[in-house]
Each structure stands twice: as C-alpha cells, then as structure tokens.
Length: 288
Image 1 (cartoon, rainbow, N blue to C red):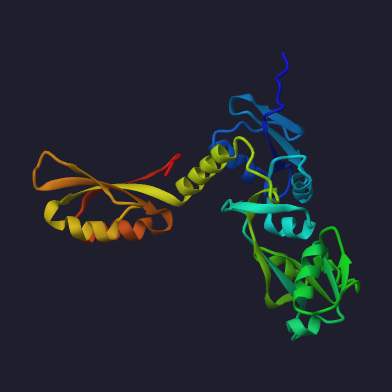
Image 2: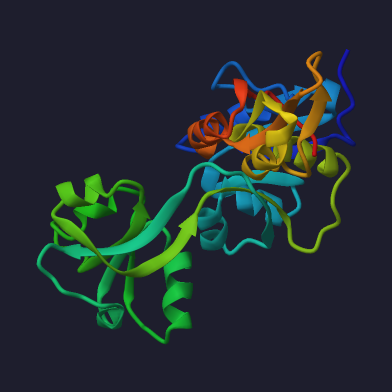
C-alpha cells in the first residue's frame, strides 16, 4: 500500500561529491533512514515522516529556494554562488574548506591586482559578488571543475577555487595570494523568510545532538571530597558535574562532559589533582 507523503518533511541531500557520504552518515546518526543504493533518487522514511531527495549539491539551493523542497544540506559556497532565495539555518560541522585566489609561482600579486585579470572559477556568482563588494572588475572564466589547469593552458591569469590541503595547486605550479574569499562548510538551508516546516525542530534538535556527541566525551572518576574543588575546576561540565557518594564517605564519583580535543590533557590534570579510576567514554547521542 502506498504511503501518503503529502505532509512529510522534504529534505535535499547531496547525491555525490565530498559532502554526500558525510551528510548521509550524520542523518543516520540522527536516527533517519538513508539509501543503501547510490542509484536511489528518493527515499521515504515513514517512521520519521521525512522524504529524502538525492540531488547534485549545486542544485540543492535552487530547489529549496524555489520552495520545491523544505530543507537541504549543501555547502555554504554553493549556496552563495547559486543566488537562490535560500538561507543558512545551521552549521553542520563537517566539509570545512577555504575559498582562495591562486596565481603562478613567482607572481607577487595582491587583491588589487585582480582588476582586469581573467579569473577562472567554478563559482562565478560567488566571485563576482566578492569582487563587486570591493569595487573590482575582472573577466570571469566559468569552468566546471579542474580550474587549476586553466592558467597553464592560457585560459586565465589566476584562479579562484576551493582549497583543502593546497597540494593540487602546488602540483599545478600555483600559489595562494590575498585574503580568503570565504570559509565554507556543510550547512542546513531553507527558503528565505519561510516559516519552519513541520519536523524542522525535531531535525535540528537531533542534528545538534549528533554534533555535540561528536565533539564531546563523558569522563568519570573518583576523587576525595577534599580535592573536589580542584577537580571541578578541571571538569566544570556543560552546566555542572554530576557527583555521587561512594561507600567510602571520604570519596565521591564525578561525571562530566568534556571536549574531545582536550580529553588527554584533562585526564592528566585530573590524575595530578588526585583523581582515580579515570574513565573516558564516547557519547552516542544527546539532548541538551
């Protein structure tokens, strides 16, 4: 029997590229079904009243901006480049990149030198807006990827492109110059000015829980009551630590959330402060 999905939340998800698997994994961790076959274009998650549409990352902002779909996951750079009537509502914490200018090695260029230059890019809307804000005029050469080859082939003087490690640019004999055009990452978007659709709060609450679980760990330890104040200074927790009495009246058990990036340092400091039985565990999900 077919399911009536009229009132289901409709979400666009990247179907390929660097954001695709990371987006699907985050949604899985948030409790939503995801496709098992990359050929699937639509997936219905009846339990959560959601329809997922797998689209080209560059097209997602257009579908959301037109109101065809309620929400979408895409890159900030692709949203701004599209010019679509969509807006960022949440950062998702993955897919971080920088958008930079690059020129041939040995060219000591500045941003002012871009005036009149041929700039190859796959993001003409984004670059044009950035240049206009600074009163610069240049000729944009729109290419669909592999822009780093354009200078060597004589199509452009400089390029504007996404930079992750910079190794591809170095291999092409290019070097970065000037300030970053922007910093991008995966974001959740919706149509500009539109009210939040049904299911929006549940989705964002779940995604926030996933982001928190990825960035925090739970630490448990035992400590003497006389050393509790020093331990609290090391592990203040998000609100305050949980303290439970132990059979030995002079000791307590403490539990607190700590940043994952600081876990080893915090364990060392707790040990030096007299804590014992220090255990750190992962957080699968949370609501704060």
